[in-house]
Length: 466
Image (cartoon, rainbow, N blue to C red; front, side, top):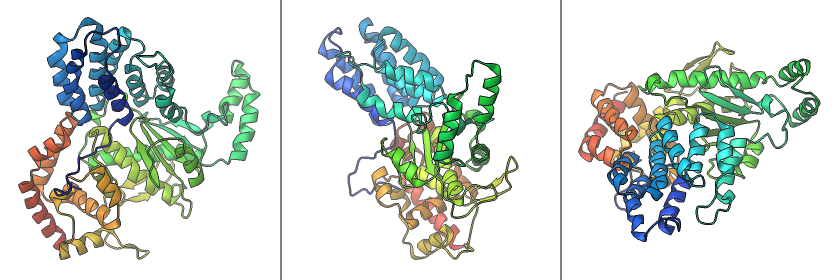
């Protein structure tokens, strides 16, 4: 939703808070004592400002402009800022090269924290933990566990502390390789305690015992079914959003956790930052988390609430891969669009249809379609120019059924409606976001207020005629 013009709010997007805060801290406090004069800080102010503003593409241009002015002893900082910008653009391979340069020049630099995020995105968790363990303060040389501990804990996962020998049974990388899944579905804590006891008695260096261990720790059927479901969501979601698999960042692996019940989720999220009621997305830990709701089972044998939550959140997660730093209203509306779906089959024969138009709910619950129809008839919807500029705070404070229904209605019109002009403009807007352009600048360029007003009129007419 768009930022209300009268409030004067500054848009807040969802990017890399702890990483940026660390780099900004380094710039404001000053370079290490071994570096020269205070004026050297001026080299970094513009790149930092652009990174903080969510404009990594422009930050790269600013860094290129000062490269020849940076003294040899400060090159490490230039490389770590470059790596941060490239990471924000989802150019993970180039980001890794830049951060390797920074760390080679200064092993204790902040680049280790940023490189840990690159490793997590590629599913290289051991390398990520090693970088975080080696993080030290550039001035004091002391370990920065106060800032890296939440990410370390997120990477280690929720089960390895209690079941160090048996946690592998709760972990799975999907066959297609796009997801690392962690879940305790299908197993109680008491069952896992027994498996942990048996696993601790087996020696994996002995072939016979290793075979027993592999059999004992084979993932539960529920975990395997979750993996198939996630890959099916991804496969069906990309064409539904006019996205291409060839644009998937090379080596990117998404991490998903599904807890057995809400109590497990609450215990986990209590030790981490940034949660939502049914589930949450954490950009730095590259993680989607939700919990199971067994009130009704789907054809897959998974709870209806689990499937609903995974479709909504994973659709948002997938879109964020293609358009990093997208505001919550956009990722939330994409999730709402995907959440109108039909699921059938089980095992590897799952069939999933996303982005459907459900006019009536068999249980009598209101549908987004009915809500949008009422809003356009009374012109009570949020004006598009406000909706497109809404802040994350506004979206969080107005996360109601009418708000999410309007987001669904706009996405349905975009991806299923007849308006080719809207798709063209939105495609150009999305391309600018992916290139690292600032959100508001990309919006003003491709979807200025005059265009949004015209598109809104055709959108209202479309829904009135449905």
